[in-house]
Length: 640
Image 1 (tube, rainbow, N blue to C red):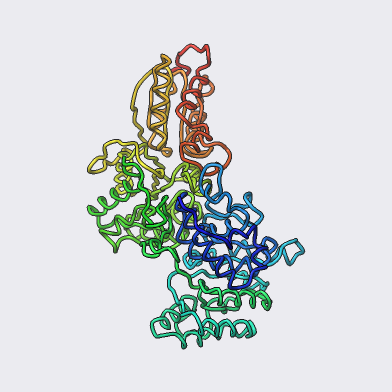
Image 2: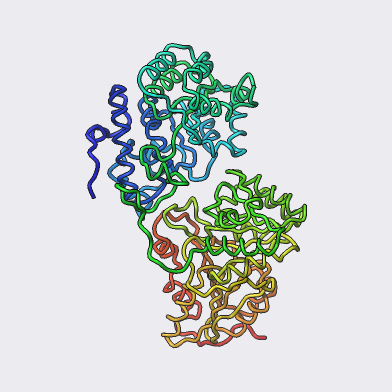
């Protein structure tokens, strides 16, 4: 594949090189950097649109501020690819999101230029304020610059941080990357005029310049600029913006792709700021790459693609992925029950509820990046008599855990939690791995917790959740394709707390919880090749447990092995606790629990990640043999 010609970028070993360039050279650098990002992501896949939207902004920040002494903190971090290229990682950028390669997000362990790790949203201002306090208390750190998008700033945590930062009054820079609209003015005289104004006016007068900027634009652009200012205003006719009311000096909106605006504004702000400053930059997600700019999601997450056409490489055909199975099953249930509604936190496509939204748009609610609000919103709907499905990734649901406990579980409200991205997720790495939900939900009184062993089971669990009004219920399923089993036209309501036996033997029992069932079946095949007979059971429920099934497995087999795609303290721990309470260990019991290890696992293919976790079919078979003992006679260890 032909790589772009990048003579200016080739002279950059780190941000210090940018500070020796003139403004015209920096503009050329931004063009070459954009080409390099497109070229690299075409080979790796990843978050393309968001990275293209901040190319000029990233160049300008590194050219003006003294990174890494000054701390540049990207919110979420999926827009950090240009930053990584400029900060000494260009030689590894084509290992992005691959095993042993660069993370797709900022990561402290990766570079001194990544002062704060991210991947979940709305954390940057809080972290920047922390660095600011550290600076003011004598720690060796300079200014802090938080770059946060208009989506991320919608979350409550961002406003909590803004309120605190405004009250503190410390010198701090927040850059609002607003890619909802473009107000790009024509180049030439207008840009030169604005540059002179921004360079010469005191900081306190900068915010008033936006009105003159708006009036000088043609009518369509003028309306866009006005709407951009209203985004951050307390009211349509407020005398000051919301940020000013919170104690920030507000500058903008400015064109985030015009270096003749960005550089003077950042330089003036850095030179003159004494307290917190918010700089409002309007950008275009996917800027400079037409296929991304014209895509519905602006190229947010892409597979490998042809950089000439933008055509993404399609995966091999096969079973549908779990997310689509859920989305279709939910839409079908909603067609039969008008009380079913769905809630998502800015991930309608990612969670599959977009399928229901296409059929029943008035019954699907996207609350933005606000998981805490989304959970309590769903609780309120449940209290009203509706049947809400709250579809949130496992790691994102962690952000609303207090609400799960206080607003849902404590009140016994029948909110249905559809938990996508259960288990290890591949290229997104540890930040998106659904390791903890089984543990953090199973300890809540009144909760029912399920996990789908295959895509047919997921259809049944959607139906089961829809029919369950006795309290909160959750079901988890992984990212990626299903096991290839036939799916029912309509899900059946499962008996609560009952598992199923898939094959029967007498030597060892393998008890699976969730989507690792194919690997458990493969482990049983390996054991049977060694002459053992194996029972394979699918628990279906972590809470309530199927104790009749578990007792039978323990009593009639030489060993019992539980397997799950979750952390310690989850399903296996529930089984151990229940058996211990019944005194099973007093009579002798060979049991092993297989979980994710007590460490975070970096990005790789899911298969490689599970191998690193010790959860392959071979690992499961070896653990079963170890539980039996090399010379162990295969006899029951619990007597009826």
